[in-house]
Length: 321
Image (cartoon, rainbow, N blue to C red; front, side, top):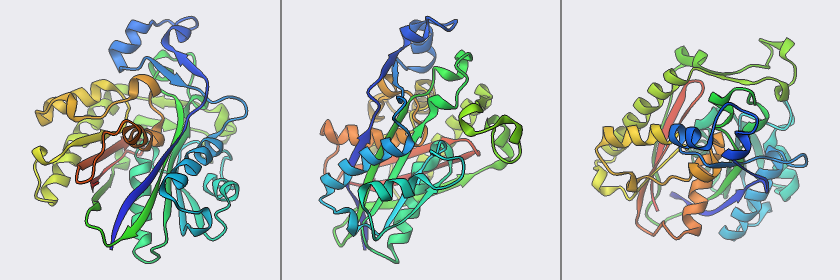
């Protein structure tokens, strides 16, 4: 049995905030943000939008494109670091309710910016036992947990959700291999307080993300490079066999540094960070959906998805489209 992505969808807030708007309240400029991050704009969720509402929008589109009815789903796995509620109910259950997936199990998965990679492999593994279609979502509203006075972090993030539908078939290809890794000794480099360890900080909406930028950058480049090489080695492939590398969209400099380490051109990477910024677990599925709409993915293409983020976590998935 092979597992294929048969539908993709996006949930993106209507409000677009360009760098110039941030420069009105921060000691920054469009030139500084673009040169340091590659970001020109980001989407910010409105008062009536949340992780669950964006995820639901993405899910409905993905299901429609896959031709799968919500009641036919076996499982919903939603990767997020910014759930609608601090603990429960899960965002996955809110999506399950709103799309009418009455026969599906549903749960959230927490692996920060690597969340979609973890969720994809989790859903694929579950389908080996129950081959009904699965819905995998990466969704975050990061703009509600950043410090809007800190130009080193707040300019990096945006809000959004991406979803994919997985279906089992005998057709060759699909999700071929995955690597999931973690190193908790680096957990202090990227932290969002507000849990039981720091109850005085209150609900998650009032706690802010703290990041040690240089350490995270160095970790990300190393993890990115090693993940691509390991996946290719395990599948006995070379970089020449890969049509696209679809990375977590954290910072253009991370992608550029990895391209140099791999000795390949930037044209081999799909990048949309300039218009959506870092949507955490949402970046990779949002990129996949945009690639589908731009007709950049074709049957037989080999692509590599790579994520890295807080935890520290990282991982990758190799797909034969």
